[in-house]
Image (cartoon, rainbow over all chains, first blue to last red):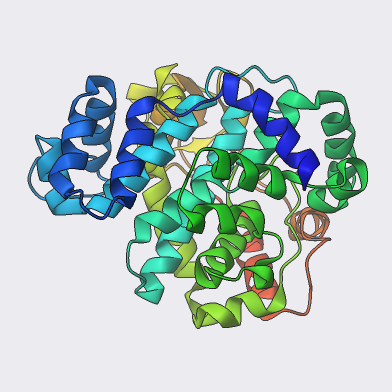
Length: 284
Length: 107
């Protein structure tokens, strides 16, 4: 996949994660670091701290009492969960300034956000630990598309046209580029040193049975992408629902009759998440 | 037809025209009966005015796409999926209902 990786080097200069996020990730992976160390690093970045406190105090979380400090947020929400949220919101920010004439960025992030919310709701039904990881995986699953739109605009335009005419986008991309947005997204995440669960879910979200280490996360993101493309108001960039891997739903062990309540719950959480996760949506 | 400021909107009003954001993206379709959640959603999208009227004053038949129109749109949208899988049939059924009654998915 050297070609997909080639695109990443140029992208890293344009869309990089802030140093504070990289430091927090490093600490998370360091065996001798504590939750307090991570809180300390996040607290040193006032803008990030404010954003994070806004998220955890929003109705998306619905904690009964106000969370005033990062250390309190870590105690209540959890170290892993907070680090994942820092990652997700920083990745959205990293791409905020990247120009792109091919698609409506707002629509892109709305589809991604809805997919993230659906993944979170599915994970809660499954009683999976750290449902925020599912949320952020869903939020970032298509991030490779943004790299493609920016680095290869002409070919991407052609891919989008073919996909809107009725073919699966990732298959058209494979023919044009020799790889697709899921490969590019995974390479970017790897270059950003994101946890392997994100990398794998992004890489295999159209072929979930190929996931080795995180089959459940990957299957949930695959399903969330399909449910979001079908049920959400603004739809995906191609207005097409991607092909379903028939065994992905079985892999989650969820009952089919929960689909409707999953979508209803996702609608509610989406309205709550929109203002805090995609602040540009409420800035107009 | 009434062009209303978002602050004057009440749940229960019906959209005479689609509600669009500043870029012209359709957020809610014509004929949607507004709920409190819709108003939050519109506000979050920075929408300031929409064209809405009390229920019953909108022209009948124009409120939502016909079953046939909606089914065709859904078939086109789902053409790359596996139509025999129960999740896809369930999703299509839900989508059809949401398109038919997009204003009150929880009612």
